[in-house]
Length: 572
Ligand code: ATP
Ligand code: MG
Image (cartoon, rainbow, N blue to C red; front, side):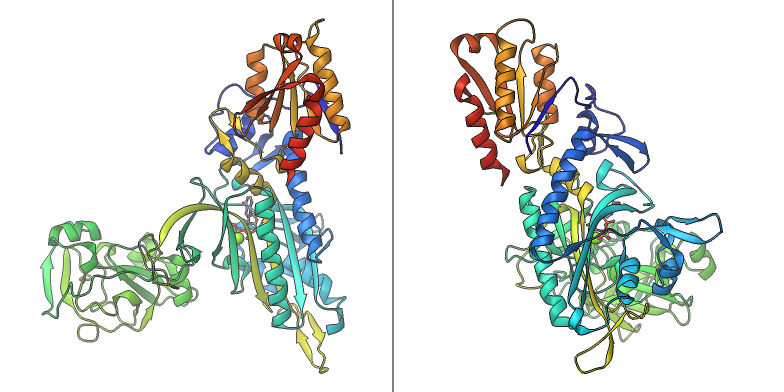
């Protein structure tokens, strides 16, 4: 595995200036360090340095999958539409699924995930409980026509994923492998050096119920998380919410209608009434697939969680401007008292103890105060509807939740029979009965993980790679390359490191020291051996550790051996 490269031959076109297109640190540094180039929105070429790191991440993932008995295979990227019709996802997936036709007009899609293909494979091959459990994985390109590709490799349209799929005869067997996958995912995060947290998540498009996301903690993360010191953590989208309420803020009172000219938002209303957002109840409107109007009532100071709204009322979508006009309802003054006939009123469970509500009067410029459920209006369904936020109570221990942000690097799901049932993937059970296979699926974003590592390991000068995923482990930097004593010493150390099995690059360019140092820190070689004229005269070189900035002088003779020891210790 010895790798000896030279900077003059390495294809790593570094940039001196920050590229304007970069929105987050990892994107900026990947471009500046000459690791990636954009081809189209969310589509990148991985240059040699990025590819070296990607291959290392893949290898870590591969070792952890092999260790839990998952077997590697390769599934096609282009998938026939028929299989997606069988699972129902051809219609469900929406515009994120890239569809194409072949020369005969037959429809295909580019795989955004591979449940259909792998279920079809197993359906035709696995017959008996004796063939189970079975776990398969691949490391392959995915394509999702994301609405907003952004943040470089964090949200691409074309990206590399490790996806595994498991098949079981019993739920207990699925649970066992799910736990093994989750364990492997924790180890992968640790080996990548990520500061991470497993969190409760929503199962989204893929379906199924039991799922955990692995979040790399980062300010730039798109996911908002809440966590408790007791160890519980969740994506706010999925977190069960315990909204702290101040009891006794309202007492039973008569229903009064107040003129509230020009008031459209809860904040304005609270201001106008001189109360906090707590006393006021915000109503958001949606409609069911059948077109029934739905009112969601939530505490005035909270946000509706669209995912929970959908859990409460399957198929519901929030109204757009045209819908408001069609239903003839005033967007800024909705409320549960006398809504249009047949409106389904759903209210957040935290409002159940609230005695009297301040609500919209379903009439522009009017609100109602003192509205009481059961007296002035009926709530058909009480449900958990709001986004969790820091300060809420922990649903497990009652402690106070804190907030942070994360990048979802991986996720594990229990799919159950979501795919096997519609696709007719069955097996003969021990008792002779024919049953649908019980499935799990498990995904690691390889290219997203690369970006997540950079989000956590950088400083103002560039990347600070953990050794396990650095493109190369050591750079030897001679400060001059002329006919003097410096270059031969550098070349000698470079050769010794390579033969010690270290991945090493020699900066053989005839550049100023400042340029070489800047590139070395930008690309972020974990160890840099600096060879200068004065040092050589004194018989020493300088070894710099990028992560800490620490520099030590080492004798020329011992340099390679010592750096090789440091590298081996840091590989993990
Ligand atoms: P997100 O919620 O961020 O869109 P997802 O939940 O849809 O992601 P999964 O279907 O769980 O993604 O895919 C497994 C993994 O693939 C994710 O955990 C993530 O690391 C990676 N991934 C998903 N979408 C992208 C993307 N657009 N760009 C890069 N990696 C992605
Ligand atoms: Mg996911």
